[in-house]
Length: 102
Image (cartoon, rainbow, N blue to C red; front, side, top):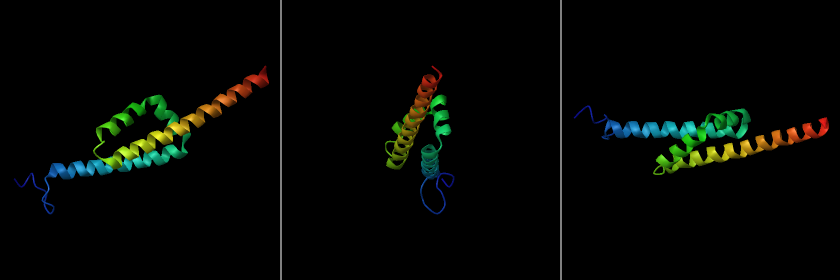
């Protein structure tokens, strides 16, 4: 019994471990969200590596935890905005390059 009950809180170790994992996940998503707001190269790498399916999976599997779901939404939103800006910048650059070389 003592191996299943954490000292001090009375909660089972598995519950405490799940809370810690959720806290780490939320903080990790928060950091990734902040990075995605400023670093277009990181966002481009996330798109090319297919991370968005994983972000959606994490969000759907943690709908019971609004903090994690919110961080996923913010991360996806920031990346979508950055990727759109990236595509527009490169698309415009390619159009201008093609027009000036023609």
